[in-house]
Length: 265
Ligand code: NDP
Ligand code: 8X3
Image (cartoon, rainbow, N blue to C red; front, side, top):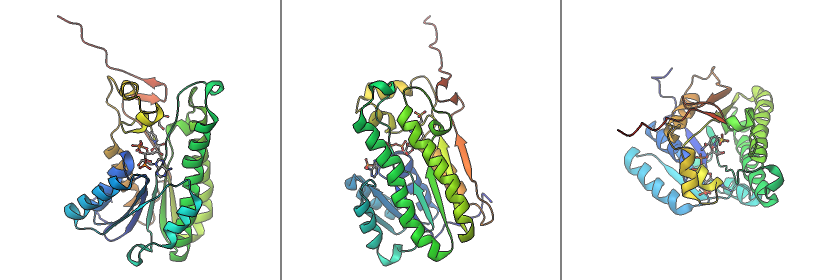
């Protein structure tokens, strides 16, 4: 199963491809010879990535500036896909973020809205448009990025956890609807992972973000890309329905073993 390449010439749509998990997925899928569609808001990053992928892997790449919270923009993006990218075999529904880490009573309604609009509604907008294509094909694979936060919710992360729990519930229900259409639905639920996620959560405070990953070996985006490509590359009769992945130093969102500093001689 691992040695076979079932991804060559398949078309893979990746949301949130400008950073972290999405960017790593683009690099790995391209190395398997897949055609790649990259979307995110930071188009200048996507253009650079597109050049790299084309040069390194000689694959076709299409990128488009897209805010997944904009339903009209999402519909327009799908309606104007170039002919070569009109069939979509794999969706990595990844765009998402957390804003703030505080008691709910102190959290901001604006932040809840952004998290719900992006992590849940944006994921739904993209999933539905993609399913319109996959239903006609009678095949496809939707890979939704949840989090251990949705499975093991924690204090100070209430609304983020709720959005990711919703992604898990949506994925479970959607899998049941898709069985008739030969479409796989996978939920990936990562734990501590060093990306721009914490810098975004702490509104750009890099020192605070770095402290999340201090004295541990967190997951790297490539680890999640490996897992996602493994799921997407599985034989047609195999669906990895739900996978939780954490670094070895973590047993839950708030249970992390940090290395202790060595005593000075
Ligand atoms: P990054 O911050 O590195 O990447 C997030 C990506 O989402 C960026 O490419 C960003 O692109 C995109 N994005 C955010 N908002 C929007 C939007 N409105 N429209 C389109 N794209 C958007 O973080 P990660 O790679 O870590 O995050 C990817 C996913 O993984 C998220 O869903 C996150 O919740 C999840 N996750 C992360 C974990 C972690 O610890 N890092 C653990 C578990 C899950 P741009 O700003 O250019 O639009
Ligand atoms: C991101 C992981 O534990 O910071 O989804 O919520 S956590």
